[in-house]
Image 1 (cartoon, rainbow, N blue to C red):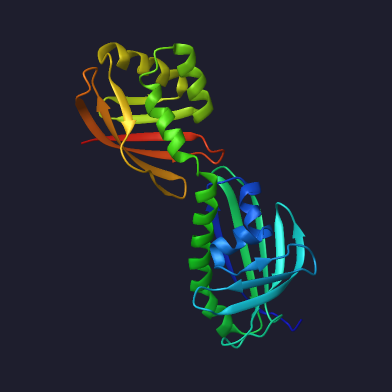
Image 2 (tube, rainbow, N blue to C red):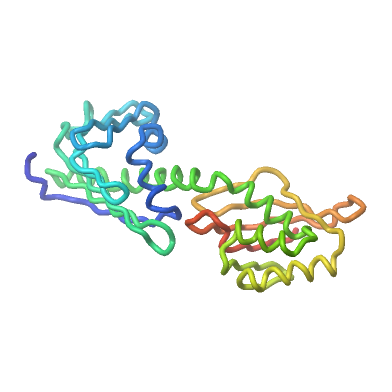
Length: 254
């Protein structure tokens, strides 16, 4: 390979585990989710990678190194169009645990400064697509978690409430709305019990589909009284932890 004196770096933090993140470098179906249909990767030294952008532009390369779930290195060049022939640049991606999930460091090395500058916005955009693809998979259960959260507020059995919260929320989960400012499951569970005592028979259900973006979920809800009449409605914002559990909820009443 020719000398590669010019480089760009980009670092992002993704709200998912390193193992989940790295699957998108080693599985062709996932690889295509953030590059485009027809993109493939054979994640072993000497294996081929292909990128087929939605506009038809194709890049190809060879895998130089792969160490799941921490590092992958491959060459990259274009089949046609952009004057960067196959094998003329090198991409190194490293991932490591981070308190918010996974830190990803990308280094792309080039022979020419112009080609480096051409790829700055490209990687900014592509890694945004990558983060969305990863978190869409990591939080594909979000609607179920939201439904269980809402149902817990009407669950009469304290043991079931505690077990459910342990499964769907972190121990230090926070909850904020116009009636609540609680920190941690130990504070939340008696708060739920009090809500049942002062608002007996009230149940909540999700209204419509959840909206998700990179670990943050919006979900509309409706509260119904014992007679079936609507008593209140609003929207909750859920922040998920990297392990897939709910870390924080903020409620907005309509």
